[in-house]
Length: 235
Image 1: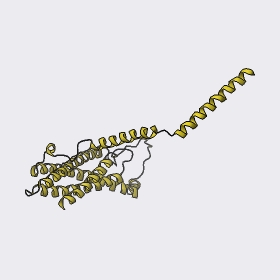
Image 2: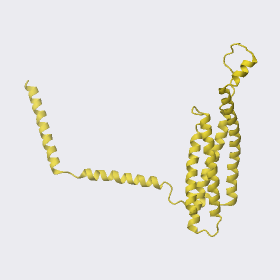
Image 3: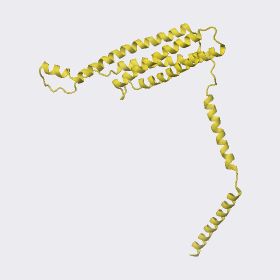
Image 4: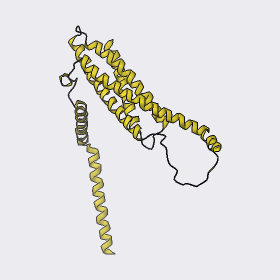
């Protein structure tokens, strides 16, 4: 039961980490917006929750000295996959932090054209307190708070990785995979080769009636060509 639950948690973490990676790639690009930053915040927080739950479950299982050898080998494979997800999540969060700081959503901009028009301070203040300006301020507050939270989350993932290495020692090179590297590619290639070999075998079978019809058609065609040449010479 514990192994199946760990697999379910790890599968959810893998999908959430992949989604987070996809969102991070769009930060600073033409599709960047506050909606994207909010979606990225929700996704990485969900990934953190799944990482904590998965790490706790796997740690308890691997520290059990009464675990059978087959069960331990399976949990070690899950542990290696889990550590890979954490490494990718940490790298993506660091990239999101760097890109978010380099491409702020509401950076102050200087006017390109100075008209020289001046007015009273009350009119300027009234325009500054418009609905659009209030939304702008709310977005800027979200941007600042999000970067601060992201910085704390990066430290949290780093501490989680160090804590994992202290509690459970599972060297990656000692974990035996279920199948050899590239086994799926080799199986698909062999299947394609066998199907390709079966095509000539089927096409090699000759039907006598079809061969006779082809011979008669060729003879008629040659006779028609010869007759056409004779007519051309006589004319």
